[in-house]
Length: 435
Image 1 (cartoon, rainbow, N blue to C red):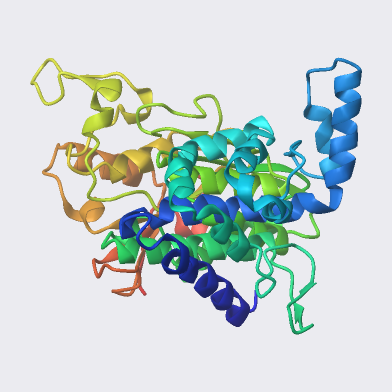
Image 2: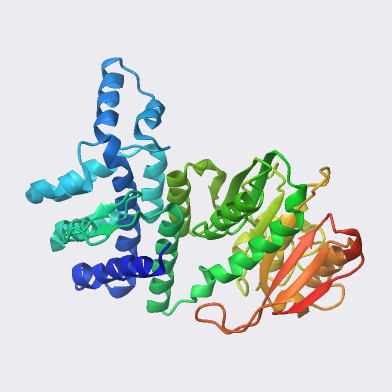
């Protein structure tokens, strides 16, 4: 995507917060409106061309007394639909009733979009919008012809052609908005946003060495802390690029505990025609979303320096009590890290999902801070986890990344490359790269 166009869209949407929401919400709440409405506007633009076909098809289903609406996907062209008579633009045609009509519009979405709306907790904000009289202005701003959130070319008020916004470009917009909101709220953006340069490096290392071994068939890509889905999207795009002759197919799977970023990721998957049900909401550590699946490729930037206290009861009984501790989750039988930092649990979750009975096996790329390398006494959980991976000869490489590469944090970070199908020349060795 053209960076200039991308920046213009982000800057415009960012400006809406101050133009419309100032004095309506406290600054820290701006994201609760801007992010879901941006998602909805993107979905709205995509559905407009087939709107009448969907309404006609729905009328037929009602006439035939058919309650199941899934057939509407065939008319909308996507895995979602809206059976309300309204669109964002037609909502503005009845300014006096825009708030009630907006609720009707939201109610018209398919169940998968209803879940997205629910995770954003958007309906909780509508009364405040109504009381402030801000709804019309917000929708008007998002419908402005100076930006194009659609997948086709459009013209602005001057007749100039605005390029289409691809799904990848829309992902960039979402992630940049999240980053800006995090910075504005003095949050650690690095917790939520992995720079594309790092993702690019990870995807290249995952797929390039084995591209000739990838044959026709379906391969599963997994991120246990998928955020808004950027790593999954980039991984699939690069995998298709380097294996275009093999006619391989890639399916994306992810899990995310933050409801807001889960909602963005799910909407992104819906827009791209991916299986949105492959994105699971909830904690990967305490409730594995894919207990019976193993994956060909895994990549992640799990949270580091974050406690797993909330997951403790699901993982272990009597943690730390000599002779009494019982690890209940088979993924973590090797050992448990300090309760204050669960990043190595995410790594062991991925290790537990490696394929053992295929020629390609599994490849993992995951980002950690220095704690994963150095903390823990001999015989302790962290040490046992490292010992387990090294003694099984799965650790292929560790790359030290440049400092300050993550937004809002200067902590040292490292990419671990793990594989259970090392090349013969790499067996018994670990490569260390100072990047």
